[in-house]
Length: 169
Image (cartoon, rainbow, N blue to C red; front, side, top):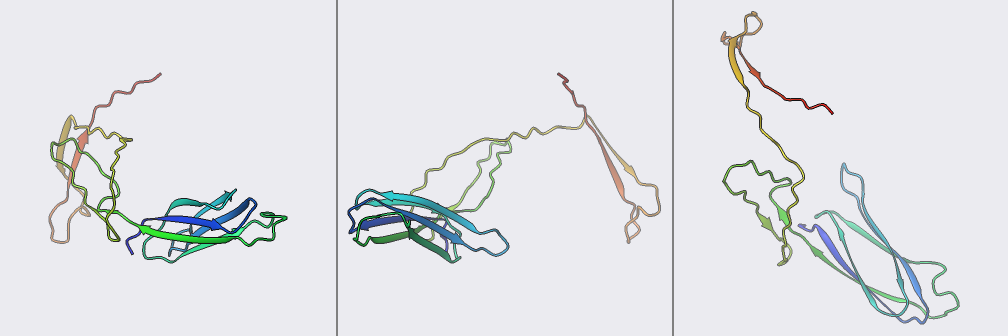
């Protein structure tokens, strides 16, 4: 619970020819399509390789490792594979951050539930929202009998007028 990514280290030993593996991780999450990560890894000698991939905290993850059938042809040595998996997670209190143009700072709370984590925030500004003020605002009473609240109060209408400059090319 609290995990948002996994660091997996695959260590191989006990072979003399190049070996190739298919590594696959899948999570089934309710009302979502499965979260899937896969990779093909080649080891020319006994060594270790590391991977990182996203996960959903609190959900079961299936990790499958399969050696290609054509891997190690001509060798009678068995391949030994060890996996080390470390779950990491940083949760933040906002999915999207908007700067509204005021001088007030925007607070973002980050929390690591599993262990101490190093956080290096990066911001990418990819949208701009320009507020437009109306040039005229009129408040009027609606005249229909149906435009009344059950208490008998009349509903009001606010009509805003904007001026736009359309540039055609």
